[in-house]
Image (cartoon, rainbow, N blue to C red; front, side):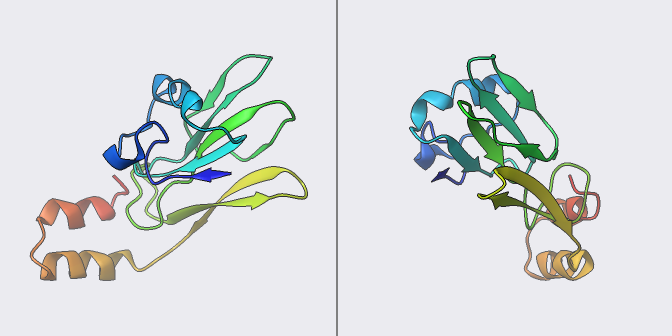
Length: 132
């Protein structure tokens, strides 16, 4: 698998993969069957294969199909942007060939307080409370 913070197209630029078109353009930039990304803080995935393209812009579990390639946005452990305040991550089961999204609570109030205390802009703390 390939792991990048943002996009495999220009990893040093930290481009966002958000909509369907963003994902389709990224497949030519990595050679593995599976690429994990983040940066947008929005879980979801793209897939290409002989039966055509597929895009799921939400955290939906799925099985890896033979002959298909995938880009998987794992979501965000710290600042989710999909209106769910819990931390998000993905479990890749290599034996069952599945990817499962998981959510766990974390101390959002404490994180917000630390953001404010550090002098960062207030909106950064506020959006943690709504997952945006």
